[in-house]
Amino acid sequence: MAIPPTKSWHKHAGTQFETQKQSVSGSRGTVSTNNPLASAAGVEMLALGGNAFDAAIAAFFALGVVEPMMVGIFGAGWMTLRTAAGELIALDNYSTAPAAATADLYTPISDTWPDYMETVGNKNRIGHLACGVPGTLKAWAEVVETLGKLDLETVMQPAIRYAERGFPVSAYLHDCIVGTQEDLAKFSATAEVFLPGGTALKVGEKLVQTDLAQSLRAIAAEGVDVLYGGALGQTIVDDIGQNGGIMTLDDLRDYQTIQRDPVRGMYRGYELVAPPPPCSGGLHIHQILRLLEGYDVTSMGFGTAPSIHLLAECLKIAFADRHKFVGDPAAAEVPVEWLISEAYAAERRGGIDLNQARPQGAGTFPSAESGYTTHVTTADADGNVACMTQTLNQLFGSKVIVPGTGILLNNTMALFDPHPGQANSVGPSKRMVSSMSPTLVLKDGEPFMALGTPGGVRIFPSVLQAIVNVIDHGMTLQEAVEAPRIWTQGQELELENSIPENIRAELQKMGHNVLPVPVIAGGMNGVLFKDGMIEGAACWRADGSPAALSGGSARPGTRFFA
Image (cartoon, rainbow, N blue to C red):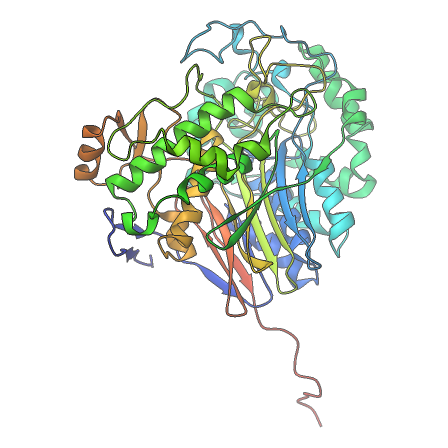
């Protein structure tokens, strides 16, 4: 029996909306992911005595099986972590370009939008040359080893089980296969998994991934070095080399995660902690919140034309700065402190007209970062919080499964600017810019909320809006992640369809080129600490299903026998 949606409405609101899902709450731990089997894997770790970090990594291994279009062990990502002792960590496990990569690796087809990021033969998006050196597997193992309470083999067991025994294909996964089947069919090992007999897997049909299960078993038994320099890695780079790619075993062997100092800042009494460059998400969340602090956002109301207009103008400023200033800090200086300073915010507020849309910045090429990613948020009663966004970049990454391994290769090289001479141009062993925004919110030094979402360049604007929804508009976490979203990077102002026609008309009069769309970004999920409980929520834009663990051991001395 379907549970009816709950209508949410806020004082002064210009947009009413209905939440489609329900939150959960647990005293011992909560796991929010974009698939119920992944959430179950995480809760299984909590029940086994593991902590939030074990739960998050078990969930990600599981997502690599049940949400294979979004993430896998040959992917990339960012993590914001908080330990029970209060340590704050930003872990960069994004992929890097192979050492043989050069600025002219791809041939651009245009110097102008919308084809600016496109290349001849689509080689930066599809096939073996599109693959960056992966960071997911190494980072996941490091988190378990250094912060978890369980071992790698244990946290991998649910994923191995799902791969060996199979699981029913959801409508979400089916639609993703159908939408990419032309490219999936170009690679025989990929087609065998997702297009058996030449037809996309149907909703409810069981997906069994025997080769992937064997690869996961090898990793569980031998450790991650079997991929980063061992036999499994050799199999993969051999296939890449035989098909026009440039990644080598040395690239895998040399890959390192980077522990960076997170970007931290205050907003209306709350402290926000998020990843630093070359991840742009945390930087621009802080930048926009600094801008918004100069306005009475609460009185503007949620989803009104004035509040949407203000958000749009702030987003245009952030995207103009993103293109000009953000790249790999190892290759170019990124002026983080200046961009998030009150002085710079005050300067840019002077260019915002609250009644009329204006161009903000010049010469900004729109980014083409993929919206296909996934996110996991976990927390436990000890105060450990894991907020992690991970990806293959586009749907099914490069579309390549290496024969005999079941492993999908990422296509993160598509995130580089294919034009030489830019801040984010291709370079040897270089990290590319990302919009990921796994964000932790503290109140008086203690965890208050953590959340994130997939969605490419729509990630940080969406996470920002959820934070504002809670802090300024008084929404519950469930309402905040499901509320209608807006987005722009200087061209059309995208509004989700549930924003009313009269609001759209007002924004059009203010000078915005309004474009109604069904979805902005992806399935957001998060946790919120309240009254000794940990609430979990996930939104309607993916298969998200939070799960929580309460209860505990029997009371000491309790017995039912004589």
